[in-house]
Structure formats: C-alpha cells, structure tokens
Image 1: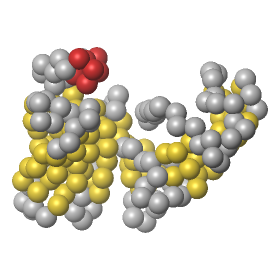
Image 2: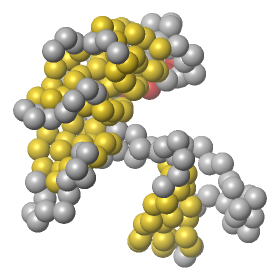
Image 3: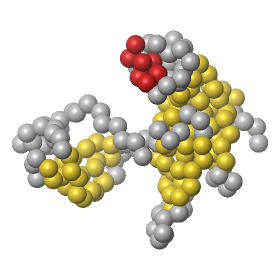
Image 4: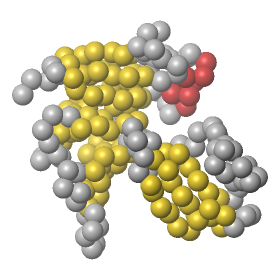
Length: 198
C-alpha cells in the first residue's frame, strides 16, 4: 500500500499548544479514525519517537474501497500496478491481486459488482513526476480499468495520452453511460469516455 503525505495545515484554533508537525522518525503505535463529512476524516495516531504525543491528521480514502458487506478491502497498488483484494476478519487473511498495467491512483465503485480503477503509467516510474513538475509527458498515458469483482478480472475501458487539457487522470466514476475522469496538476477539467456496454 502507498501512503502520500501532503502539506501540513496546522489546526491552531483546536491545537494551539502543538509545537508543529512531527519530525522523523515517526513511529506510530495506535490508531483511531473519527469519520467526518464529505469523505474527510480525522486520524488520531499515538506516536513514539522524538516526542511522545498524539498526532492528528486530516485524511480521505485514496485508492481504497470496502465491499458492501464489509468482508473485503480493495486496495489500489500504485507501485504494483494491480488491485489487491484482502479479506477482513478471517484467519489466515485471504489475498489476491489482479494486474491492470498502470499505477492505480484511485478506486471507486462502478455499476453493479464492479470497481473503476484510474491511474497512469509512463516509460519509467520517474516519468510521472517529470510530467507533473516539468510538463515532460512523452509516452505518459492515463487509463481506467473496470474490475469485475465476481470473476476478479480487469478490462481496460479508457486510455488517453497526457495533454494540455488533462495532464494525468487520477480518479474515475461512471455517470449514466459515460465514464468521467478527473485529473491532477491544478487541472480544471474532466475527460468523458463512453462506458462499456454490458
């Protein structure tokens, strides 16, 4: 699983006595997640390391969905270029993966028992960073795969080259008979593709 840490926004009104962001090494010991509104949640972490403190983070799910019955986690593997399915509450844990051929950024529910995985890939892993930071996007494509959860197979349903309108796709949802793709890098547009007919 990949974790991304964004820019800190100290909540000085609530935690005015906090000396600032935690420095390395960060050694979490215990976790508690308080659900919030609009997909933004608060994560409390009992931290060891340079200071013994409870660290507080604002988080939203990225690359993770949970089955409707709560029995499975579906995790987008950015580095592994695959979607993993992990059982919940079973010993031993059941795990399997389906390859998609791109770095999964987000996973969202599709129609019926399907998930839409969206992400991107380039000639080398460093290509994505170069595309975002320097606009050097040669050979970089964004892709969407639909994963059938019954057969646990993936079918690519959209692919496009990076361009000035939408540099990198990061999330996809199905709206009616279209798949809408949102992007990154201060994008202000979405791409629309025909949804697969079933």
